[in-house]
Length: 306
Ligand SMILES: [Zn+2]
Image (cartoon, rainbow, N blue to C red; front, side):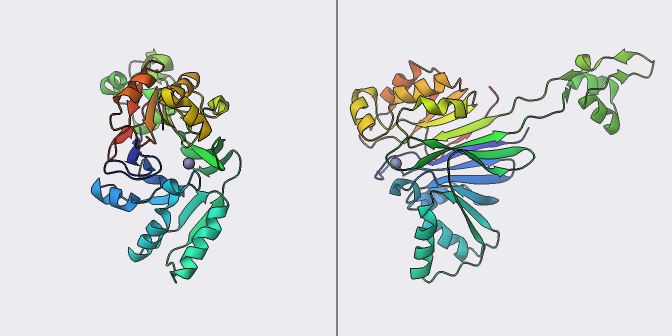
């Protein structure tokens, strides 16, 4: 099973604090890395927490509030100074393309690597290989905003039981046939039915990123049965009016979405600077969705099967 994780570089909202950086994350699937959002200071966080840019060729920007993308021009520029040659693909709101082009122009930055821009629109597949895909879907916020779903494609082949392999040591070709449903004929002519010597394929794992957004049950269809859901929890329920006014969510609302979506695990983030102690946010979420976690910067969360 491939390594699948999300690393948190920044989980704060709006302004940076001494302990909270604006939003950025790195999703890793196998050897590939994907960045989501790139708030100011993201490069410093990458260095501080020893994250890597290796095989990072795709950056997804959810919306154009500064705390989600003001770090991007600096990162593009640094990649040039690091003598990057691989193409970089950026997916973001349509206006981002001109912003980046203008910044490159006025700073006389001549990129030595190809930069490709994809303007987000509605729900669509942005990236796809035979094993993995990244999809976008709209969120409800004060400006156009998108969420992203990273998901494994279902495996077709069954898995061999360890006890069978140890007892019978089948050849590579034989194993391939069994994974595809064949029975096994032992040396003494006994037939071992496929269902006795195999187990079902892994359940495909998925990770959904929903920030920034107001409480919006419409997204549940996009993220149904997601393994791990990151949902913003800018406020607590006592500031529900403020959350609604600013088109953000409370911890209880994030947990409600996780429950409705039948998520495996909920990661909370995008915390307002007003909460120095975040345990009450966690308690509020756990009362509705017990498998909730407060994200911590510098921590890598595995995306497991649920
Ligand atoms: Zn925002």
